[in-house]
Length: 268
Image (cartoon, rainbow, N blue to C red; front, side, top):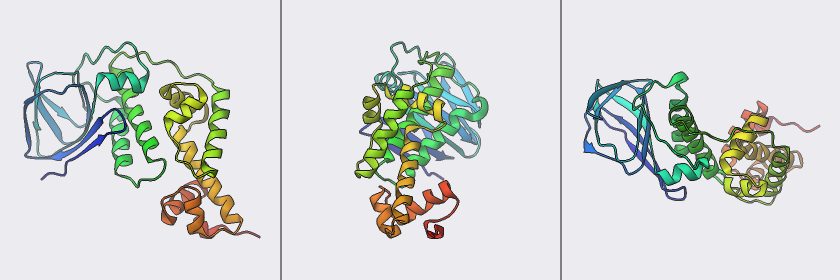
């Protein structure tokens, strides 16, 4: 049984995500031009790499450097995993790194299942409903996976997130203006407005507020839709004006933020 999917991010450095779920498929000896970063979610995967035959149970990582030959198969029944393929140049660009050492250990344990959750989050974002901020959500999910993988397992020295009150003020002002003007906002644009690298912006804003830039955009879209609803704008029109795909998209986000649907918002 197989339910594999392959995502190619043509706008984002050609980064790719392989959603693998199979029992009988095998991969002959091959190598990838860039890094291969994966996490076993279910079952057990197996391969031969660096002269060793390995079995990777759920909770294991698979971290390969560029041009490392390996095979692949399901080691016990069915295996499910997500594998991120990314070039050295893309890692440097996304994380703002000069020094890139790579991975010394092929199959470390995923402590706290942090990387597995990050890769699952990326898959959910890629398979989710598209909208004006969909790409920003994908880019932040890619960043989370790469930052976790290289900071914990690749000895990458990411710039520590700092307090950036000016950047936060600029971010909120730009998001407010963009949403009300009906614009599609991008992570690169927000970072350029703030004068910061996108990676550092994401980490600093998340540290300061507990929310990423993408989460701030979604939040203000809901806030703006609420204002329109209170002004008497029909829900379907308010959804489109606030930048949601449709009324059901607004309803889902509205319930997550306020605990009720737009129809339960009563003006007295």
